[in-house]
Image (tube, rainbow, N blue to C red):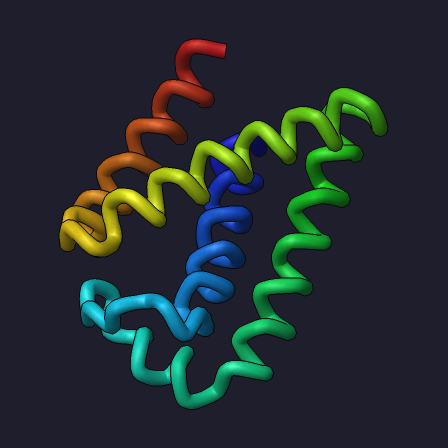
Length: 110
């Protein structure tokens, strides 16, 4: 569940990041052009995913811990996106490896 919540937060923040005017367009995922052309739709989808992930976080850990954990995950993933996207280190391969390892750790270690 933690991996799924983190994935939703990552996708929603990346949608918000893609609508920014300051973002240098680097086609690492291939959807950046669509995000730039459909900014209002991207912001709506990003907001919906962010609210869903906040709701799942509150369901998983309760109100106080859920909001706190959501904000910690959001800050961590937002910093990673802002740091790694301009360096072109954020692509399908690295994202898939990171979330697959996270899922494996979540399923087999917890």
